[in-house]
Length: 148
Image: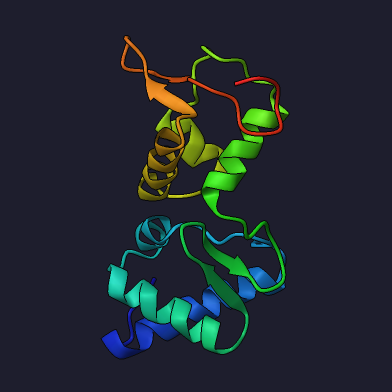
Protein backbone atom coordinates (compact mmCIF):
# COMPACT_ATOMS: atom_id res chain seq x y z
CA UNK A 1 0.00 0.00 0.00
CA UNK A 2 1.62 3.30 -1.04
CA UNK A 3 1.84 5.67 1.88
CA UNK A 4 1.16 9.29 1.05
CA UNK A 5 1.14 10.16 4.73
CA UNK A 6 0.74 8.22 7.95
CA UNK A 7 -2.56 9.98 8.65
CA UNK A 8 -3.99 9.06 5.25
CA UNK A 9 -2.96 5.40 5.20
CA UNK A 10 -5.97 4.18 7.17
CA UNK A 11 -8.26 6.08 4.78
CA UNK A 12 -6.62 4.35 1.80
CA UNK A 13 -7.13 0.99 3.47
CA UNK A 14 -10.76 1.71 4.32
CA UNK A 15 -11.37 2.80 0.71
CA UNK A 16 -9.73 -0.41 -0.57
CA UNK A 17 -11.92 -2.53 1.71
CA UNK A 18 -15.03 -0.53 0.73
CA UNK A 19 -14.33 -1.24 -2.95
CA UNK A 20 -13.82 -4.95 -2.27
CA UNK A 21 -17.17 -5.05 -0.46
CA UNK A 22 -18.94 -3.15 -3.26
CA UNK A 23 -17.47 -5.47 -5.91
CA UNK A 24 -18.43 -8.57 -3.91
CA UNK A 25 -14.85 -9.67 -3.27
CA UNK A 26 -15.72 -9.48 0.43
CA UNK A 27 -19.32 -10.55 0.85
CA UNK A 28 -19.69 -11.60 4.47
CA UNK A 29 -16.80 -11.85 6.91
CA UNK A 30 -13.73 -9.65 6.58
CA UNK A 31 -10.23 -11.12 6.88
CA UNK A 32 -8.82 -11.11 10.41
CA UNK A 33 -6.98 -8.02 11.60
CA UNK A 34 -3.72 -9.99 11.45
CA UNK A 35 -4.39 -10.89 7.79
CA UNK A 36 -5.22 -7.26 7.00
CA UNK A 37 -1.98 -6.14 8.69
CA UNK A 38 -0.02 -8.54 6.46
CA UNK A 39 -1.95 -7.61 3.32
CA UNK A 40 -1.51 -3.87 3.74
CA UNK A 41 1.86 -3.92 5.52
CA UNK A 42 0.71 -1.76 8.42
CA UNK A 43 0.26 -2.03 12.17
CA UNK A 44 -2.79 -2.97 14.22
CA UNK A 45 -3.70 0.63 15.08
CA UNK A 46 -3.85 1.62 11.39
CA UNK A 47 -6.09 -1.37 10.60
CA UNK A 48 -8.22 -0.52 13.64
CA UNK A 49 -8.72 3.04 12.40
CA UNK A 50 -9.66 1.82 8.91
CA UNK A 51 -12.21 -0.63 10.33
CA UNK A 52 -13.66 2.00 12.68
CA UNK A 53 -14.09 4.37 9.73
CA UNK A 54 -16.08 1.72 7.82
CA UNK A 55 -18.08 0.91 10.96
CA UNK A 56 -18.94 4.61 11.41
CA UNK A 57 -20.33 4.57 7.86
CA UNK A 58 -22.47 1.52 8.65
CA UNK A 59 -20.67 -0.66 6.09
CA UNK A 60 -19.28 -3.20 8.55
CA UNK A 61 -19.96 -4.29 12.11
CA UNK A 62 -17.92 -6.02 14.76
CA UNK A 63 -19.06 -9.21 16.45
CA UNK A 64 -17.11 -9.93 19.62
CA UNK A 65 -15.19 -13.18 19.28
CA UNK A 66 -16.25 -13.62 15.65
CA UNK A 67 -14.61 -10.74 13.74
CA UNK A 68 -15.81 -8.05 11.37
CA UNK A 69 -18.77 -8.59 9.03
CA UNK A 70 -20.35 -6.72 6.17
CA UNK A 71 -23.47 -5.23 7.74
CA UNK A 72 -26.49 -7.50 7.43
CA UNK A 73 -24.62 -10.70 6.59
CA UNK A 74 -23.21 -13.71 8.36
CA UNK A 75 -23.84 -15.86 11.39
CA UNK A 76 -23.56 -13.63 14.48
CA UNK A 77 -23.86 -16.34 17.09
CA UNK A 78 -21.00 -16.78 19.55
CA UNK A 79 -18.30 -19.16 18.35
CA UNK A 80 -19.01 -21.62 21.16
CA UNK A 81 -22.57 -22.04 19.79
CA UNK A 82 -21.26 -22.60 16.26
CA UNK A 83 -18.81 -25.25 17.49
CA UNK A 84 -21.54 -26.94 19.55
CA UNK A 85 -23.70 -27.04 16.42
CA UNK A 86 -20.74 -28.57 14.58
CA UNK A 87 -20.75 -31.44 17.09
CA UNK A 88 -24.46 -31.96 16.49
CA UNK A 89 -24.31 -31.70 12.70
CA UNK A 90 -21.43 -34.10 12.27
CA UNK A 91 -23.02 -36.72 14.50
CA UNK A 92 -20.02 -36.83 16.76
CA UNK A 93 -19.71 -39.60 19.32
CA UNK A 94 -18.25 -39.63 22.81
CA UNK A 95 -14.55 -40.46 22.48
CA UNK A 96 -14.16 -39.00 18.98
CA UNK A 97 -11.23 -36.67 18.36
CA UNK A 98 -12.25 -33.00 18.59
CA UNK A 99 -11.01 -30.69 15.79
CA UNK A 100 -7.68 -28.95 16.46
CA UNK A 101 -7.38 -25.22 17.13
CA UNK A 102 -5.97 -24.75 13.62
CA UNK A 103 -8.86 -26.65 12.04
CA UNK A 104 -11.40 -24.54 13.93
CA UNK A 105 -9.62 -21.29 13.01
CA UNK A 106 -9.75 -22.29 9.35
CA UNK A 107 -13.31 -23.55 9.40
CA UNK A 108 -14.80 -20.51 11.13
CA UNK A 109 -12.35 -17.85 9.93
CA UNK A 110 -11.57 -16.64 13.44
CA UNK A 111 -8.47 -16.03 15.51
CA UNK A 112 -6.75 -18.64 17.66
CA UNK A 113 -7.68 -16.51 20.69
CA UNK A 114 -11.39 -16.79 19.83
CA UNK A 115 -11.04 -20.55 19.32
CA UNK A 116 -9.24 -20.99 22.65
CA UNK A 117 -12.00 -19.08 24.42
CA UNK A 118 -14.67 -21.31 22.86
CA UNK A 119 -12.67 -24.45 23.74
CA UNK A 120 -12.36 -23.28 27.34
CA UNK A 121 -16.14 -22.83 27.49
CA UNK A 122 -16.73 -26.29 26.01
CA UNK A 123 -14.28 -27.81 28.51
CA UNK A 124 -16.07 -25.94 31.30
CA UNK A 125 -19.38 -27.44 30.15
CA UNK A 126 -17.78 -30.89 30.24
CA UNK A 127 -18.24 -31.49 26.50
CA UNK A 128 -14.56 -31.92 25.60
CA UNK A 129 -11.35 -32.85 27.42
CA UNK A 130 -7.67 -33.23 26.68
CA UNK A 131 -6.91 -36.80 25.64
CA UNK A 132 -3.81 -38.87 26.29
CA UNK A 133 -2.16 -37.97 22.98
CA UNK A 134 -2.51 -34.19 23.55
CA UNK A 135 -5.57 -34.18 21.29
CA UNK A 136 -8.89 -33.10 22.67
CA UNK A 137 -11.67 -35.67 22.67
CA UNK A 138 -15.41 -35.39 22.95
CA UNK A 139 -16.35 -36.19 26.53
CA UNK A 140 -20.13 -35.67 26.30
CA UNK A 141 -22.64 -34.69 23.67
CA UNK A 142 -24.47 -31.35 23.68
CA UNK A 143 -28.00 -31.29 25.09
CA UNK A 144 -30.53 -32.45 22.55
CA UNK A 145 -28.18 -34.99 20.95
CA UNK A 146 -28.38 -38.49 22.30
CA UNK A 147 -27.29 -39.54 25.76
CA UNK A 148 -24.35 -37.91 27.44
